[in-house]
Length: 293
Image (cartoon, rainbow, N blue to C red; front, side, top):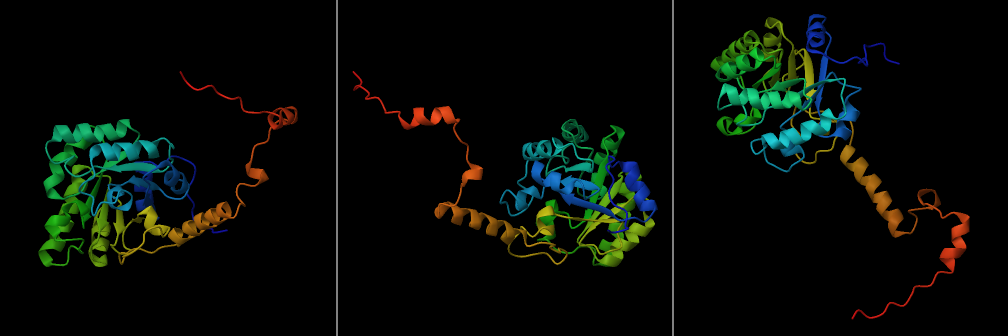
């Protein structure tokens, strides 16, 4: 048995995350897009994110831009029905927090009504008005800086950010402005480790890194990446802890082989008639049906 602190059964709250940051205990966060993955993740992690990454992970899109609010509501509701003890955060998708503070409040408030504990939105100084509006309505907000996937077209692809002097300083300034606006935590994605560490040590709120080195308050990876369900190119920052794709495919192949060879279902997977009915069924003869007039 490990003597490291393990997640308790108590509900994870924003004050608890702040306590973990203050005590320098690492925070864990992963994605879930349905009830099954939520139930797997919930006993293990501190935060479950219903991410707009559902678009490229589950829905076959090349990026997150096509993900709509209705899609996010659908997946959030599935996860929320499991009543997770982990803090449940939902991504505001592209165009759901860009038009006006009023629309942003309506969309984010809908997430909370569907069971989310908090929302996450991408962007720095440009999004401060939206963050303030949400916080004023008692809607907890997690920020997201660095490689922000909804900005993939502006960035020219999924590229590491913060490598120039101006970009690095801008990220640090944006991080502090988001914290001052009321964000309870920040995701730092795809930035140099030294920059993420500097942001973390100068902020009072927790940072959650993904492709941002080990100097953050915690780490997030997509569930499907952790368990090895994604085939093809794997980002540098991903470490798979299982070959889930082939494990599951092998299980399905064994089942299909048993079906083809007449080995499934066996007696233990079959239902039986009560004894008195066996003779009745054995002696039953189909009636001849007259031709319809």
